[in-house]
Amino acid sequence: MQTPRTTKVISLLALLGAAGCHRGASGDAKPAERPALTRLGLSIADLSDSRVAALRSAARDAHVELVVGGATVGVKPQPLQVAELLEAHVAALLLVPSSPDLLHELAQTAASKSVPLVAIGRGDGRVGAWVGLKSGTLAKEAGEAAGRALRKAGCEKPRVIVVETSRWPETSRRIEATLKAIEGECGGVEVVVRLNQCETQAETERLLDEGLARTSSIDAIVAADPAPTAGAWSAVARSAFKDRAFVVGVTDDAALVEKARAAASRLIVVAWKRDELGTKAIEAALAATKGDAARSLQEVGATVVAAGG
Image 1 (cartoon, rainbow, N blue to C red):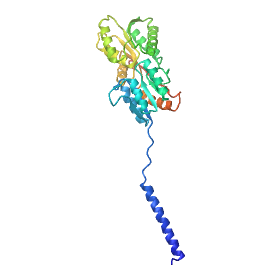
Image 2 (image 1 turned 45 degrees about the vertical axis):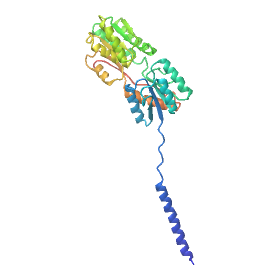
Image 3 (image 1 turned 120 degrees about the horizontal axis):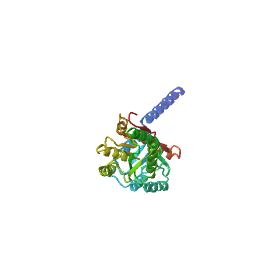
Image 4 (image 1 turned 90 degrees about the vertical axis):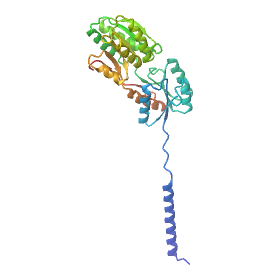
C-alpha cells in the first residue's frame, strides 16, 4: 500500500516525464516554411537585351522571383509569353514592348486577368504603370549642348541626319525638341534625311552606312533611343565623317557614356544607369500589385554628358 508521500513523488515524476516528452516532440518538429516569394513576369522580344540582366539583379535584391517569358524554350512571340506568364500566376507583368499596338493589346490581356502591367522604356505612362525616360527629359538641354559644340566647330546651319523609329511617337517628340534647341543655338538647321526605320542598332548601322556613303557633307546625327544612338556612333566612326560629325542621342551604356565624357569627344548623350532602370522597374511592379498608382510610374534619373563633362 502506497503512502501519500510516495504517491506525490510518483505524480511529480510522471509530470516531469510528460514535460520531457513534450520538449522532445517540439525539438523534432520541422522548421516553419518560408513564405513564397512574390512572383513577377517579364516579357521581352530579345533575351540578349542587356536590361534582362539588370532586371534579374534588381529582382534578387528585392527578394522577389522574376520569371522571364520564353526563356526555357527559346524566344516566343510576346503575346504567347504573356499568356504563359499569366498561367504561372504572376503578381504583375513587366513588359518591354516592341510596338505600340502590342503594348495596348497586352495591357488589355493583363487587365482582363486583373494583373497589373508595367511598361519598360515605352509608353510614357499612358497605359498605366511605366518606368523609363520621358521623351522631353533633357532633350532640349542635349540639343543646346550640341548646338554650342557645332557653333564652336564653325557650323552656322548644321546639316543633320535624324535617326528615329516610326513606331513610337515619343521618339519624334524627343527629336523635335533636340533639333529646335540646336537651331536656337546655331541660328538654323538643315535636316538632310530622316531614317525612321531604326528599330535596332544593326538596322541603324546598315541604313547609315548606306546613307553616309552617298552624303557629301554632314555635321551631326540626332538619335532618340539607345540602340540607334549606339548604331549612329558606330557608323560615324567608320565613315569619312568620323572627325567631323557629332552624334546626339540617349544611352544607358556605361562604356558609351565614357566615350561621350572624353576630351574632344563628338558624342553628346542623355545618359541614365541601366541598373537604376532595373531597380525602378521592380519597385514599380511591386507598387502596382498594391494598387499604388503614384509609385508605379517612375522615371530614371538622367544627365547630359558631353566632352569633358
